[in-house]
Figure (cartoon, rainbow, N blue to C red):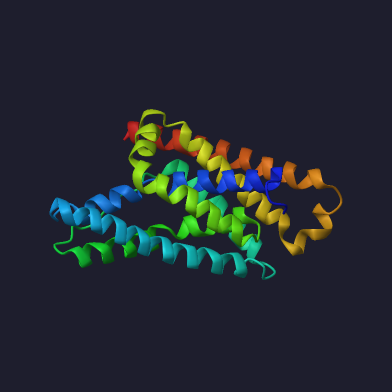
Length: 226
């Protein structure tokens, strides 16, 4: 993948969107963990907790990028991403994070919560990177500051314009489709023509969005009937 090529830049944009959609509530986790601390310590907690979370997330993502080179794992990862994209349309995230009474306890809470909540993010970013470690690092460097200092804005936008969640789910589904198409087991199928991979990815996106919207509407109807 050539640096600054269309494929490289589109993959980088996908990573940034994925980070914003899946990690947009990290600021809430940070705020909940540090809310009982004095104001002067809250800033230190945010900085140290974020740095620790970034280090762990970067290491985990780079490891997954390497693991996805193993035959069969791209298929598994793609199917998991399809499920994550579908779940994103149906479920609302909860933030059951207890406030910590000390600075180091708050930092530990932030790092652990980010590691647990970031599993879907790690897989999605690794899939979108297409084996490029540079893309992972660039994506984290660009998106993490936005997530930490601007995620409340992202959350407000999602609350005000709920349909934006379909953009995030669509990017996830597109990434999943390309991951499955890149699987070595299906090389002979998609090697026949380059456009087949993009058609397949588009079908995955359409399937996830249509089924997700149908299931969400049906869930609302069931809830209203009850």
